[in-house]
Image 1 (cartoon, rainbow, N blue to C red):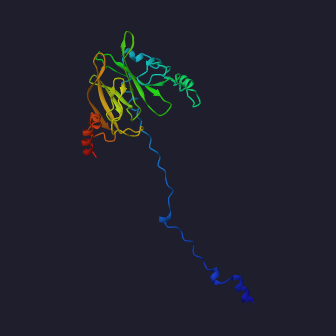
Image 2 (image 1 turned 90 degrees about the vertical axis):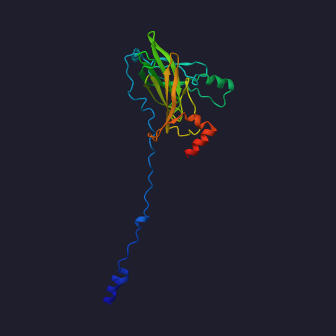
Image 3 (image 1 turned 180 degrees about the horizontal axis):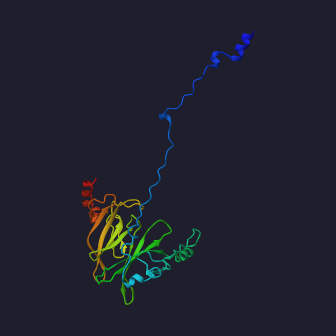
Length: 276
């Protein structure tokens, strides 16, 4: 009886055997949590323009307050009521949006739209002699305020005459890769203008439009175009060829007058056949 009780208390050998551990997943079966790569920061398209290069001068223009000045509005940016000038105060003037509603009658909607005003803000002033008289001109860069990420800009070229700035050339530029302003600088008595995009240049007071095959994200241009302009006593005239450079491959030779190729069916077909 004693032996039976003892065996009953201790259980059988099978009951007391060490049970094998549950199988563990192999290393191959362990899946790592997916990682989300951080979106790359868009390039700083204003870095060259905002550098301290050509920002000082002995010309009287160097002491003029361009942050509190009245500017004419460039072609395509005039106000709906026909006013064509704007006055900066401390380097800025806010836009007037004057929002309309669908339930407005046409006359009311037109009246509201007429109240809209363009906004601008001061960006930079560059100084160098462009007229050949030994005295620097001022190139004042203003940004069109759109309440978004767009960077359309206007450049005002002033000379000093009769004790005050005289505007001799205003021109506008596009938005980032769509003809946006990359840089301005002097070279051999000429004004060098660099605009983002393929074969983008200035035609009078406005920037040219996109050419065939120049489709890319606004944030991140892959090319820029360098053109040169010389003062003839009345106007700035383009000099030489329009050169388009690759930003991704700085060592690549520039494309010359590329729009004349891509906008011609025969020339573009031949070019694309040789550059698949």
